[in-house]
Image 1 (cartoon, rainbow, N blue to C red):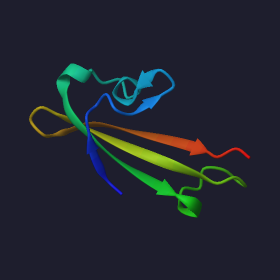
Image 2: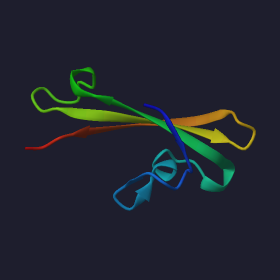
Image 3: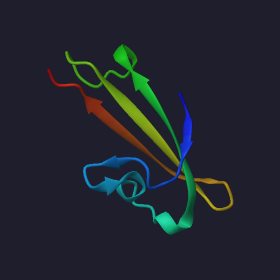
Image 4: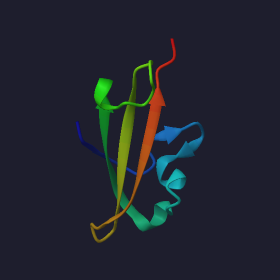
Length: 75
């Protein structure tokens, strides 16, 4: 499922995703993200998880970066 959101919405710890992708927030106009769940994510040998992929766009509408954020669900 894809969703458009501002570049300050998603965070990992205390860092926004655009900062983790080493992009300057003031140069961006938006971000789109999607999740891969279950076996298709293949993030661990045994445990389930997900991969969230973020695409960042500049003010002209061009994709200027991306970030893949894997997560393993711990029991």
